[in-house]
Every structure is written in C-alpha cells, then in structure tokens.
Amino acid sequence: MQNDVSTCSGHSEPTPRSRGRPREFDAQAALAAATRLFWIKGYEATSIADLTEAMGIGTKSLYAAFGSKDELYAEALKYYYTTYEGLVWTRFRAAPTARDAALAFLQDSAIAMTGGDCNLPHGCMATLATVGSEGHSELSELMRATRAGGFDLLKARFDRAKSDGDLMAAADTTNLARFVQTVQSGMAIRARDGADRDELHAVAEIALSGWDNITGNIDHGMQSKA
Amino acid sequence: MQNDVSTCSGHSEPTPRSRGRPREFDAQAALAAATRLFWIKGYEATSIADLTEAMGIGTKSLYAAFGSKDELYAEALKYYYTTYEGLVWTRFRAAPTARDAALAFLQDSAIAMTGGDCNLPHGCMATLATVGSEGHSELSELMRATRAGGFDLLKARFDRAKSDGDLMAAADTTNLARFVQTVQSGMAIRARDGADRDELHAVAEIALSGWDNITGNIDHGMQSKA
DNA sequence: TCCTTTATGCAGTGATCGATGCATAAATCG
DNA sequence: CGATTTATGCATCGATCACTGCATAAAGGA
Image (cartoon, rainbow over all chains, first blue to last red; front, side, top):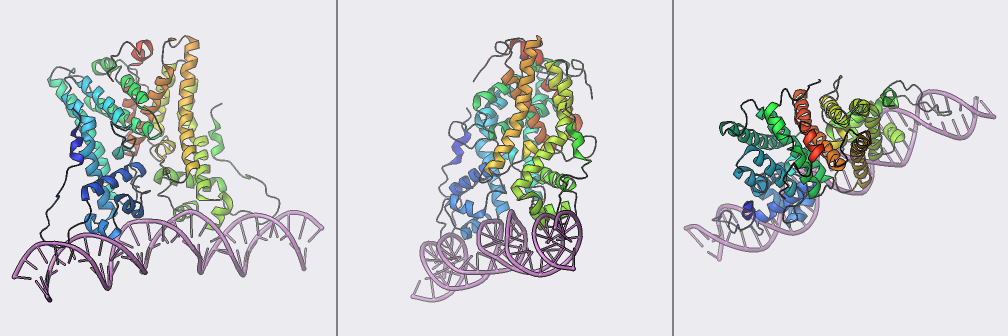
C-alpha cells in the first residue's frame, strides 16, 4: 500500500535531447546518489568532491546538469520527498478515522526512519537538515516549507474529522497537528541517534494513548500552569 | 543541588597564574560568547573567524586558551550544560510525582527553548547539534552522551516513582522516558523553526494528557499493529 | 636590571571549499 | 564532410578553512 517507491527507478530517457553529445550518466541515478549523501551527511558536511564520487561523474557534468550545490540540494530534497513521501503518508490517507491516520503516520514514520524495507538512511532528511541559518536563505526557507507541509496535511485531516463527526467540534486541531508533528520530529532525532524501530513504535503508541482525553477535553482536562 | 547556574558569572580569577603576561580577556565571557555562537549556528557553520570576532580575541589567544576548535566546542557544550541545565531540570527534580516531573520538564523545556527569561537562542544546543558524522567522532560521541544523560534522568525518576507507589509496577519506564525525551527533542526542532512558547506549552500539555492510560495499561490499552 | 614565561597581533601555512576555463570528444544537422 | 551543439576531463581559480611562526609586549622571579 505504501510502495509508491516504484517511481524511484525506471527512467530511461528523461529528456530526449535533439542535438549535441549525449549525457553519459543516468541523471536520476546520480540524483538518487546525491540525495542519499545529503540525507546522511547534511548539506554543509557534503562537499562537491563527495558528491562527484558518489554520483560517479565529474564536477563539470555535475554543474552542467544541476547548476550549483544549492540547486542540486533543492533537487535532491524534491527527489527525496516525491520518492519517499508515500512511505509515510499512504496509510495516513487511507485511514478511516483521525486517530487511525495519526497512528499510521507515526508508525510508518517509525519504519521509514529506521531504514524502511530496504536500508534507507536513518532519520528524516527534511527534519534534520540544518542548512545553516546564514546565507542559503532560499534553501532554508524551502526546508521550512517542506516541514510545514506535513503540519498542513495533519491539520487538514483532523479538520475533516470534525465534519465526519469523528472529532468533537471543540477539538483543537491545530495543537493536535502540532503535537503529532513534534513527536515525529523527535523520532527523527532519536533515529539519527541510533534508536531502533521498536523504540520508535513504542513512542508512537504512547503518543496517541491519550487521544480521547486530548480530543475530548483538551482545555479543561489539564491544569495549565504557565 | 540544582542551581549550579551561579557558576555562569562571577569568575574573577579562574586560575591565578603565577608568572608571565596576564591574559587580557575574560575567559568565561569569551566561552559564553563562543557557546552562544555554536548554539545558534552549529559546529560546522561556525568558523574560527566568526568565533574570534564574537569572543573579541585573536586566533592566537583562542588557540592558546582552548587548544582547537573541537576542544573549544567541547568546552562550550560543558558550559552550556552547567549553565542552563537548571532551567530544565530544577522543577523536574522538585516535583512530587513522576507525572508532575515530566510535565515540569516539558514545560520548562518549552520556556528554555524559546529564549528563557532573557533572550537565549532558540532550540536546544545539545539536541540540534549535528557535528557531522564523519570525523569529529569524539565530539559526536560527546553529544550523544549528553543527550543520553537526559534519558537517564527521566528513567531514574520514573523508576523511583515505582518505589513511591506513584507509578504501577507494570509501567514501562524505559519507553515512558523515551517518549518524553522524544517529545522534548521534537520541541527543539519546532523551536528552531520558529515555534513560539504557547505552541510548545500546548505540545507539553497534550503529550502528557494520556499519562494515566500510559502508566496504567500501556500494554493492553492499545492494540499494537506493527 | 636581566631572564624566563606567557599573551598578543600580524602575516601566512597547506588544505579544501565551491565553481570555471579550456581543450577535446561525441552527437545532430546542413 | 564541415558546422554546430552539448558533454566530459583536467587543471585551476580565488576564497575560505583551521591553524601557526615570528616578533613583540607584559608580567614575575632572580
């Protein structure tokens, strides 16, 4: 159900160029290699030399095909998202209730962040990427937007659940979505630190164990202190 | 027991050197400036030139006082921890129950990660630091150990709660501590992305809203799917 | 005062960073 | 076959990286 991953390979002719010497490498495969490297090491710690070696091409070909390191990173992030988003969001989309959706999202995140069914790098590229605050403002904003997209999906699903009668009208879907997003972000850090799949699954389970309390009486069931 | 924070200022003579030209700068203040810079920008994105400017000293003095960039970072991390750990763990230690302790930890983390009472950098230096996987293996391990220390404190407190009768004997304190740690890690990422204090407080509140379900019947209240 | 010790400022070390110039190779088009 | 267009390999660019050598300055001990 979650194998949209099939889109990751199978590109034979990306753009049939009419004239000039044909490209010697598979741009999709090279992008996949670059994506994996960025995913593992992050933007700043990945040098052009690292990339050319992993992609199996020279610097001239890299710049001819992708323009610059920043543009390559942006392409890699897009590739990452389109290739692997299904791992995390497919069951979420098919879930009948908001709670099932949230649980599926966190459970599948636990799987994806610990390598998926093949041995993907651990952790979430979009969540953990630093892309230093100074300079790279475009990339920094792109990352932020990518992360914000996850929040939007969660909140939209929870809002829909209100129409379905699945969630009470008083439920704070914004804070609910923020909470789920925060747990997933935390799982990314734990995965990077070596957490195994069982640990992350347990976290997902615990995170939603108070769902009824949360969605029912979020504002008067807790004594807010601050 | 917990207010070692007093050590952050008030150092007049760190080590009364007997001979030679005296140091012209305040090593503690310089370390504080370096810590702040590392905190904001991370290890890789902070250059020696950035550091010397922020610390107000030359490179020769920096290396004479701290040895290398790696050693300076290790000192900064120690300074960060000893100076600010009280912000997050003081109320935790004084809390009468495990639940109160966990809530205090998350609430105070929300405050600390959004600037505290003065304008500290947002996010958690120990959680968000990358310190690239390659090279820097010592620093990388130091960061991991620092993060693991938080888990140990949480788990120890929850284990103690079992003796107090505060938690049921069947409660899974390991997964409980991992969950709280994961939520706090996620808060660090949200804070770096611009989340305000109210949002993080709401997350803390929601995270513990299922406490009774978690601690009481963690293993049969949920249907484990994976 | 002279010697030793430590600290500082300036200039510069080799290494690596991201990115390019240039000559050449390989394709299509006329 | 030229002519044009695109791709690649090699050498290299200037900038910046973490870090140091050297001369000098400022302290204590004799």
